[in-house]
Length: 453
Ligand code: TYD
Ligand code: MG
Image 1 (cartoon, rainbow, N blue to C red):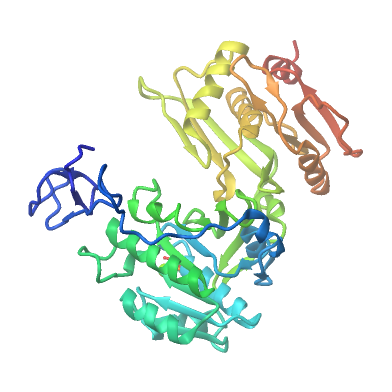
Image 2: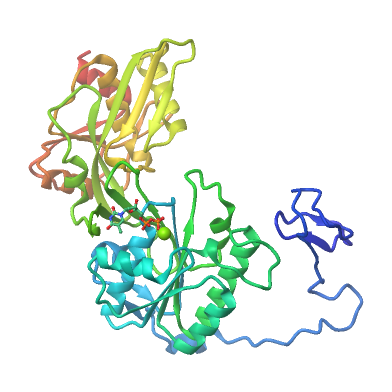
């Protein structure tokens, strides 16, 4: 940025050398403010700041090794939090509108309140009566939770100062409005300022704050994204609208492992935890059909089995379709290319549809082999064995690579009654005594194994 560009647009962060009513970069009106330089320019004497203090790292050794936590008593939620809610921490819970964030947090509020925390639930979207109605539907009307319907940040902070709760839930951060910032609620600068104020206030006063943020499917809404780096923990609540399963996924956690998931089911009486997700994800599986295989996956610290379905059909157009739900589209393109060039199985002129059943989203490369198996099975119209699970990463030269936690995957598969695993070669013996382990070196070998040389 040029040295004298001290006027900055609060909407898009573009810098200008002089003030104007409209931002030339994003077209926003009245969004340009002057920025005073923080550090004194070269040559001047004083920075006019207050001198801070530093502490020897070793002097902090008396502090507890683990931060104090409160458990909700819901295993699926506590696991994602890394073992309970940490005092004076800031969390962001993101997700699509209507996915169930308010429901989840009202239920969590009731749980934490029952476990002794003073909880305030502040809604900027619904009136207190509406929240109460929801609570009644969830059977939580007797919970000792304080409700408020408020969106003015100054009023909220004043209330919190007086009430001194242990936990405050802000639903949602997009509805909050700080009067120090001159733009509409929901704008990036408002969201950023509100989250910043709330987080600071919470940390100073020993309050845990959970902020709800609406995110669109593509993560397009910039608002909550700017909050991610400010908070200690970012959780995403995901799921497909048509399905009742909901996943709470930790994408960042300063107080626990990231990528941990909790599985819930949305029912008429709110969310209930799902203790055995594999059984749930496989519950709709009928008799074996071509294109359907079971992937032994790992989500966070826990194995989750799910069904991968592929459909291959002659394409009516010159540009065949590649459609993916619950997996990565470019990864599918890679697997198709490897199948074609290393195994001679071509998909030219064919539409390919790939779906992870139950609304689950898989990010692991370990699903490669299961996807390849589903594609081959669909292409050849031959069902794979019903008692077989797949896992393994495929590299561009067709080698099947090892993946993490093979043993956990096998144990889970065995527990659910699977008898065969098609998988990479193991470096050490895995103990799944009741299972036949077919360890494959490469994709071509796998294809030979199924269809004979
Ligand atoms: P909500 O928590 O309002 O979503 P968000 O806060 O993420 O926008 O949940 C909305 C959906 O959840 C709504 O479509 C109805 C459904 N729902 C149930 O199925 N059961 C329930 O008990 C509740 C409260 C909501
Ligand atoms: Mg809501």
